[in-house]
Image (cartoon, rainbow, N blue to C red; front, side, top):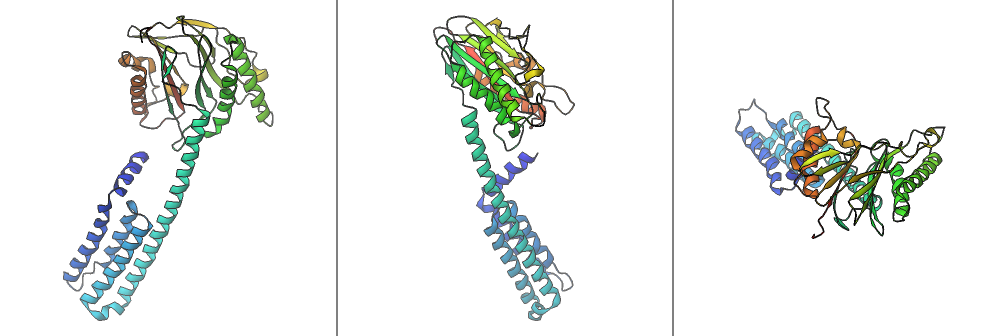
Length: 370
């Protein structure tokens, strides 16, 4: 609802003709007040003109309409009776118009200052997103890739959900992670995982060794950040996939992350990890043993990675979003269209605002001819 109001206000401000509305209101009040019987006074209605102007105008426009409102009050007094201009009634109305007009102008100035600060914050947030959460290429080797990020905080562009890819000499390694919590406070935790993955991902180390290395890096950094014995309060769920270029067998290590979904021949199936590892960063609370899972990704198949912000999104009745069921409607779409449909359907399910950050990555293995 708030976003609809902001969009409506922006559309109104984009139309210069809107300033004619308060001017027409002032003229109407002046004409009716002058023609009305002597005992009827419509001058107090003049305050409505500057009052509605901030909805579509800035400080200058509001000040102009406020000045016109004062002038209109003077005109009414002069046209009715020149002596009325010096009456206590008209002087009180003029003073009221001046005070209200000045207050509205001050409100507009403060609002414009806040909007400028908000634009700067958005710019910094978008820059941080590009630096931390690098955009995924649309094509990596034989894979077609699409990604989507939806932040829970209204003005944030990034949160604790992350994804990344790195090329090796034989294929592509893909990471998706979800730091505990939501919004900007989790960005630092997620960045630790991304940094470690970008440094170690391209190496030819086995997938279980890579997972152990990432867990060690995350654990060391989180324990160094935690104070007051809060070890274990911060952790990151993650899934790491190794997708070979010449082989249909995908290897995966799951660290407490939601299982991927595979689309094959129009059917959606879940790749459940038989021996998932605990989330990364738990330190002494968990001694992980990383088991490499395997599943098949043939030409034309798609795999969808996601965070729990998607599957735990609730509608007004408290029902979780049925991701696998909804995906069944778009199994024939390419990955970009699939994420487009999922985004629209997910936001409709929750009423336009997510309760947690959400990230999705869709990968399709293209036929050799492509």
